[in-house]
Length: 210
Image (tube, rainbow, N blue to C red; front, side, top):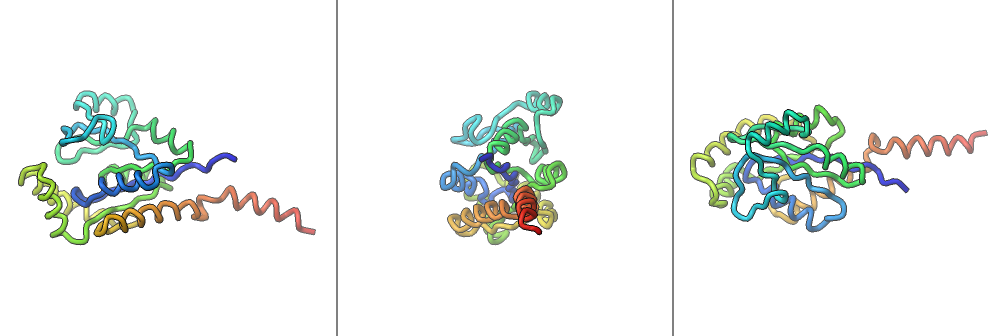
């Protein structure tokens, strides 16, 4: 039997919300069900990050070439760097029946929703603004000026959260990951995604009509 097409799921959140950690845990627990799309970016790698795993790290020139070749589903600039989603891998995984997770910023997420109206949009947030700042400072990877720019960006991003389908408050990691998983899997049973099965049942039922 042919597998149903996977669900394109966009996960966004304030920088420091813990969405990256959630994605890693989701993949670890349910690896066979999901494909995590690797974004391309022009930002420098952080300690321990590997090209092709966390991100495809590209020069600005190389990234702009990808834009010119229409090789990205979406792209945006965030804190002075480009971020974008390569097109071919996403389509391949969806056709294979895997739910594809895109971890991208709010600008890109809304562009995805315009191109793919049935995409599922989830926004991850910490329990409070104070906790958000605590997590950003606790990473110890950025100076005060970058942290301030991320917090300023969060103020703007908060204005767009209403356009998402679900909000996931990342307080207890294990609970947040399970909530994320349940939301995505429940989408497979939405009537608008099961029209083929409904039409098939209708046709079969006609066989009982006298």
